[in-house]
Length: 209
Ligand SMILES: Cc1cc2nc3c(=O)[nH]c(=O)nc-3n(C[C@H](O)[C@H](O)[C@H](O)COP(=O)(O)O)c2cc1C
Image 1 (cartoon, protein in one colour):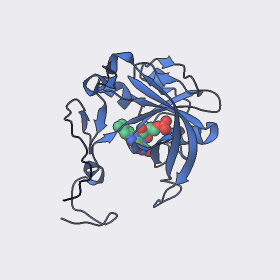
Image 2 (cartoon, rainbow, N blue to C red; image 1 turned 60 degrees about the vertical axis):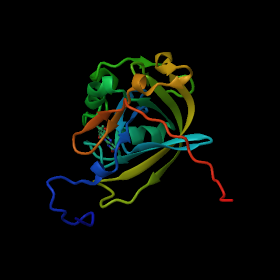
Image 3 (cartoon, helix red, strand yellow; image 1 turned 90 degrees about the vertical axis):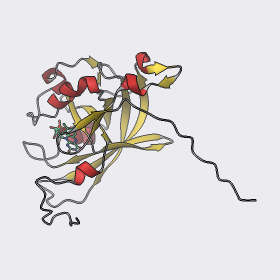
């Protein structure tokens, strides 16, 4: 089959996000102007550079009360956020923090999560998460949208300034994926815990002689 986005595809659900998979989940904590904590999952999320390390996530669509989603608005105003790794064990709590809650709601409290202080930025970390990236805002990019009011799309770019790793996920100095057990977002309502790995060495270029 072939379809153009925006035109009928004839399927019961939009297949787009079932094709770009698996997506890591950036579980973003931030602070509003009054110092209230906010926490929400974003799977339009990834690492995009090493030197300096940078991550991106995209807020798509408006907050239930209108305007930008809390995470994007908070980061635009405060310039900092933390990206917490959502492990499979935290799937239920992560999902709770995606509720379209009123702006004033602290999703750490909503989901029964513990705040751990960050070292270099003001927003707290999720203590239960196995690893967290402290980030400073680089810039927010306005993405194309079909409706700038009802569906604003923003790409948030952050520079990672501090990294926390739970010692329990380190085995012989390497992050052990089975211990980290990150949760991957698939399409529809689907998720997958990442536990299995295999190793490959990248080829070096060899000239034929
Ligand atoms: C696994 C998962 C991934 C999500 N990914 C995104 C995303 O990439 N972008 C987005 O705008 N919303 C995403 N959402 C929905 C937001 O989490 C939801 O709109 C949340 O209420 C936003 O909270 P905030 O306004 O406090 O930032 C996702 C939800 C879940 C459960």
